[in-house]
Image 1: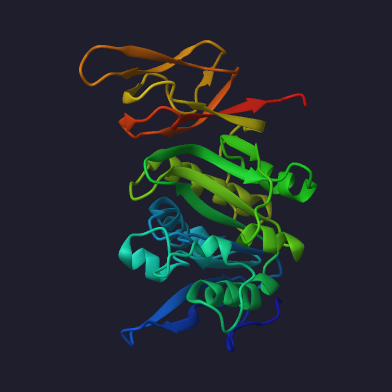
Image 2: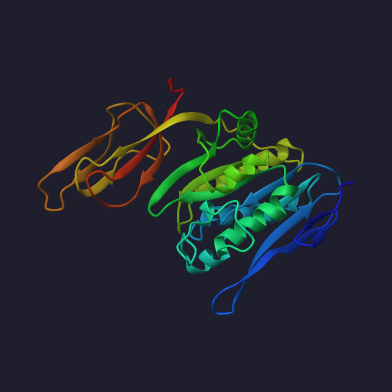
Length: 318
């Protein structure tokens, strides 16, 4: 039998499912904003998994992934362990459909946070204080930025074997070696020996059903690997990427992509063209390396030097 857990003075016993409140934050309008946390617990001991999304308010794909996961019958009736699900961390920015908090801060640069700091700092502090101590590992769901479409991918640090082991169990189409950034949830969790991987898929404010389905299936594979659920899923071979680069616009104009996101391209292959809007010039965009397309800039109007196509290289030799 599992022991009870406590989140912000709210107790969840083994075998219980509860929606609890991480904390409430008051805005300048006297409006109180609460962050709901869905906790699903089996009676039997097992790992404690965090699934979090909505760190940025316009990243809707991760929110939909978690919504789908917590409504599945096999997840509602966990065989062992605990699922901590936070579909929307950044409730304020979600209400506005924006990436940043009202004060302009990026919540995912506010960690580890402080109790009496800015709104972002307080949210970060509460995650570190109440959630991180009770989990073993987690997946934090994100999307590309405005008009950036990321092919479904997990980002982790290859130098840490626990990161790679988790990523292989999740088995996203792409697994990318990605160093930690200061002030992020993933970095601060790693300092506490709690591996959290970042899943990237699709673009902001637009449902991408490939990214959503790959995210759902990855979560189910991960939970099945730890015997939290009993559900067999087909194997999903992953490609490990240990080097990445951006192909940039070599002219200004209207960008037309001709290669598919996620596809393998060779150095010199045609990726797209930039057309002068007055019909005078057409400039080819060629791949600079052999690699996989891991992200695309869907901005139709581009300026010289803009990042257009994100390429990932497998088995890059330093």
